[in-house]
Length: 248
Image (cartoon, rainbow, N blue to C red; front, side, top):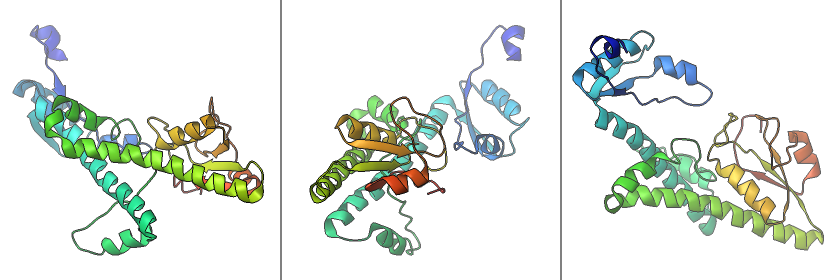
């Protein structure tokens, strides 16, 4: 920073990123930004820097607000995913097709239910809500509940796979082969950070099930045997789709 040498002071500003894996460089340039400076001067300096390459709108605020904006965005998404994940369990218990339920519900002009999954992963959504909750534990029951719901969905998937595996083993009178489809934390990326799919596979392996995985976006894994899509289809008794990669 120029002022560091000229004015003997330090100027600090926060600018939370809103980039998605797989499109990081594109969104780095095109997304709108919230810039929060410790002072008006530092905010203005950060804005001038971002203007050199950012085509999105640049909004100025203070540093505390900018940081909370980032955490709030990810907590918001976590809460919405938790609702979808809870619905999927409800539908399973009531023998209702959750995908049909969500499709019809979203015809409402003010409803947009997300698709459920096997949990929540990534370096932001699975982590950021806890920064708010840990700072204000008595004032964040909804945020904390969303985290627990999404964690419990991962546990629920593990139990469901075990139930299905037990049923097939009793039916076939032998140990079955299971292939889990997808390991990354979201579709069509190679990012395993906080991935619920990876956690599910590792847990199933630790419980003694014969597990392989198909993850077309990575070449190897230190603890999981990876196989191709055709191998999974042809050599498995049970396929468990954990990540909706486009190749599947």
